Image (cartoon, rainbow over all chains, first blue to last red; front, side, top):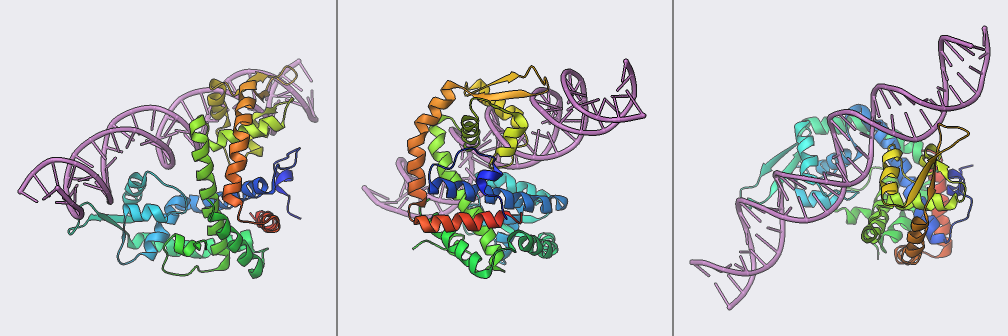
Length: 155
Length: 155
DNA sequence: TGACACTCGGTGTGATAACACCTATATTCA
DNA sequence: TGAATATAGGTGTTATCACACCGAGTGTCA
């Protein structure tokens, strides 16, 4: 049986409300899931944020994306997109090029090396997700997704 | 109607699996919920991590907690507990005292000022949770909590 | 009792994130 | 047209995180 959050965090008192309990459960679960992914990505020299960027850019091929559009599509808030992309450019994962039509814009695209890295990560990541969430049936996963979608409406 | 994650992140392609979709939904929701809380706490000069520490310490009164126990109870991983507590001590929110029996241990306790701050935050935080999660019925919240608890078993 | 391993908190250092501000380009509209 | 405004990306600086390592204190057991 899974430990409840109360047991997990060794709390004495119950939660003050169901809403608070749900809130804390979402944060705790996210943290645990992210930590596992970070562990998997670390040997590849990639953070989960960079992994997220690569997948977004792969989905935007062959057009590429400008910085702000990319930032808005991130899973988590990332105010300093410029230097995150600087580092990824240095690592050879992305390229940037200033547009001719609107010279304010800089399009970022995933490189061949970036795509190869994603390809290499495909199987282990799927495997991780299976390990993490394999206990939930398709119906339960669907239900979880729907409840979280509803939760995001308010925040 | 709430936007699905696919719409929210303006993705073209569907997710490769339900497990991946659930994974991404948890992370996205956590990020949004945390951002709102950070916005609420910022005027009080508190990060959500510090807020978490204060609540743990309040629940541990009057004994206090040692650094490692505190770290293990955090919602999110926090490797550098020492300097987080340094900052909170400087802010007058916690005190630390080395134990006499086992001189390796340093007990951390919440101060009166820390408790007062938590007290002040009580109502706005409850209000925030209502705003964030008020769309979900008690039954839905219970269901969400159970599904997340099950999800954490694998990670 | 004394060498050893273990646990505790702390520290040095580099990487990353966060915030405010800046410059260049484009757009709007009198 | 040209001043005002908006938008794009970039930069300077500080705070925070993260990792590896350290010394002090404790327990163990020959």
